[in-house]
Each structure stands twice: as structure tokens, then as C-alpha cells.
Image 1: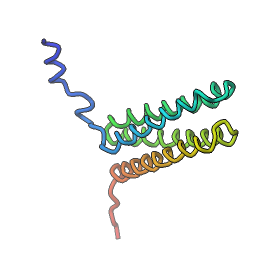
Image 2: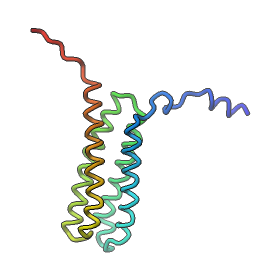
Image 3: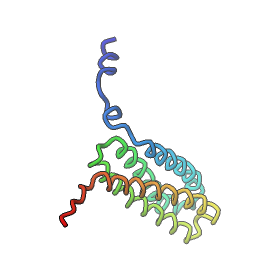
Image 4: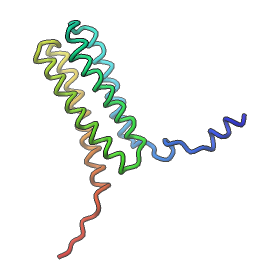
Length: 143
């Protein structure tokens, strides 16, 4: 079993840069909301399912991808991914609001999605702020 031994001895990205504990929570919550979204997507009118619904679905998947990828990066690169996911996530929330304003989802479904998305947004913002503090050079008092 030479191949197995090589894999055991080889350092993976996960071992070099394990994801922060809160990252898994963000990812888990986002995947959970995405599962809920897919049940709503199935019931959208055909015209909207493949336009606005498809765009929302693609952005959901992009956010999941960015969070997953960020969790394995070193701090300097991680901040770039988290800032990008923050922007894409804001667009996701905006498009879901448009979906609701067009009466394509009812109030109950909108509240279920937006409540979870708001909490995830706060978590992403907290992660971003933490990374900003960790990657900023210390301020030297010259006075």
C-alpha cells in the first residue's frame, strides 16, 4: 500500500491552513439556506425560474464556493475571498428582495430566507473585520 503511505505523509492544504472554526458554521448555514432556496425555486413560475431564479441560484453556489475556498487560504489571500463573497452575498440578498417585491415568493418564504441570510451576512462581516484587523500593519505612534 505504497500509495496510502504517500497520502498519509503528504501535507494537505487543510493541514497547512485549517479553516477557522466559525467558517464551517457560515458554510453550514449557507448550505442549509441554499437547500431551503432550492425548494422555493422549484415552485417559481417557469418564466422567473430560469431568469431571476437561475441568477439567484448561481450566486448562492458562487458564495458557497468562495467561502469554502477562503477557508483554506492563508490570511492575506483569505481576505480577498471574504471581501468578494461579501459583495456577492449583498447582491444575493438584493435579488431575493426583488423576487419578493415581484410577488414571486410569498411573505413567509421571504422572511424565512432573509432572516437566515441576514445572520449569515453578519457572520461574513465579522469574519471580514477580524481578517482586516489581523492583516493591517500596526499603527506606530510618532508623537
